[in-house]
Amino acid sequence: MADEASAAAAAPAKDEKDSKKRARDDGDDAAAADDEVPEMPERWAKKDVGRAMLWYYRDKAGKRQGPFYPGQMRHWWTAGFFLPSQLVAPSFRGEVPRAFVRVDQFFTDAPAREAAFVAAEGVALWPAARAAAPGPGGGGDDVYAETVARADAAKRPAWLEDSIKRQRAGIHHTIHQPVERENYN
Image 1: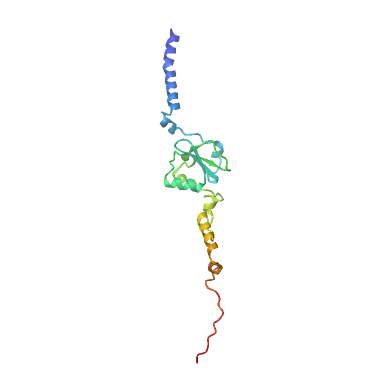
Image 2: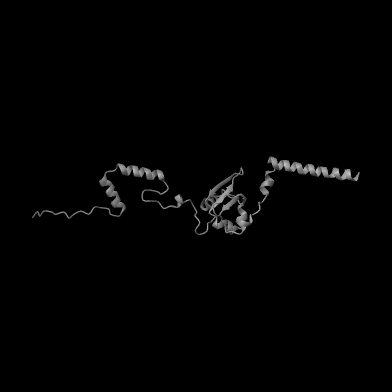
């Protein structure tokens, strides 16, 4: 009889656990999932996150987004697109991370959050095309403008191309021979 009473008392607890599991599996318990703080992988805790070459993040649907350069992540962070609870993951050598942790686990206090996603010296902030200095034909990263400029150059007469080249080289006029004037006395 005592066994039946203890079994009856244990049954509601089991049913309660099953209903919680079902709710979590169905996605009804989204608030509890947001409150979960994933554990920081030990390999990241030992590294300087400023040395991360690339970053990934999980969007609202839980999909992995990335890779992104530190400059891009920094821009989004300062613009307010990421909250401290945003799930992110660094990539130190181009690897695709499997674990994601909250931003506030990497940058724990206010001064660290002010410097969030600032890359260490030697780490590229932006993709190479964006970081490149503008070339002589245009903006460097504007391929369309460079193509149009080359097409326009093909239409110009040779004397005009020579003049443009001299102007770009800093020679703004042609060196003329001295003009001999007649003596009108």
